[in-house]
Length: 238
Image (cartoon, rainbow, N blue to C red):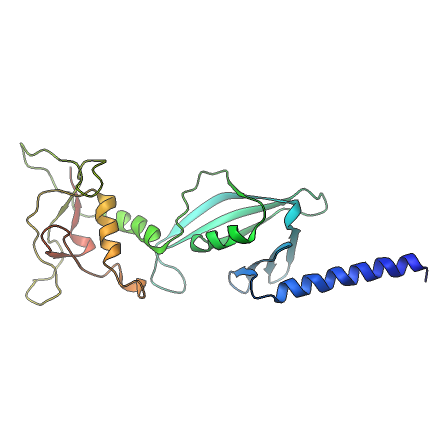
């Protein structure tokens, strides 16, 4: 065999060894279920499915966020989850583009491993923390609760949490608890003082960060009078 062929073969073997070494390193980014695994090393972006392997070299790719889906519950726990869809497109004409999907809480770690920025073509709001995700779920639950009609002559004041928008929530004990036991909901007599975003942030801040599966069913004290309430007691003001 000519010498040049040995050089080519040696180069291919070396590249394969480098790929295997990167793949085995503990600092690689890896996420996803076994049938749709996403792995990013210093050199490569890979999507491993049951029947196919997609591979693209980092130096050749452009990544774009094209879609986002919000789910109130994840398959693994009773917590909200946002799934991002990102297209990986290579400038190499021999490499087909492919999509990867990942939890938004993994987005920051993915960006740290990539050499190029990720474009957001769909202007998706990416929730990178559990509190961000919970806030969206909190709002969606409150929006289907009973509406509170503002009494005649009462004017809404700026939210005392942010002072940026008018207060638009009122706490009314609407759940079925009777309140005779410690820890159950109580009647709040405060006027509307908080906007929905600030009240949701307060609700999230009072939770056990180690047990997010309990957040939706929990009770927290009113930030003003300390009367305990749950999500069912939060009403939007009309």
